[in-house]
Length: 119
Image (cartoon, rainbow, N blue to C red; front, side):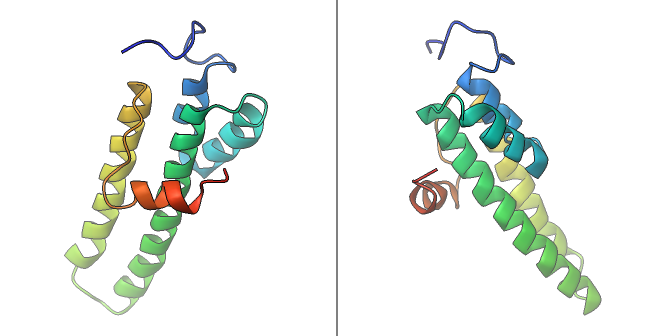
């Protein structure tokens, strides 16, 4: 696959930098969006920022669910299964961004592209 730009990964003008930094916590997403993407918007960075935003929203929902589930002493698998799924989807997206791919993560990827299309 051809490189997105001639700049190295980690350079602020490389769209892969914003895509990968967006996967590194919500603070990384904010830095990637406001610090890197706003000054150099690209379709590649926007694609991955939309996906990570959806994954962070899903993680917030799972965290709230986990607190409620633990409070009511539900079985541990009912907490670990959704958390593990979010982690796998996050890893899938991170690897895709590192490989300069634009494949939606399963389950929520296409929804993220539709919901946050103005990003």
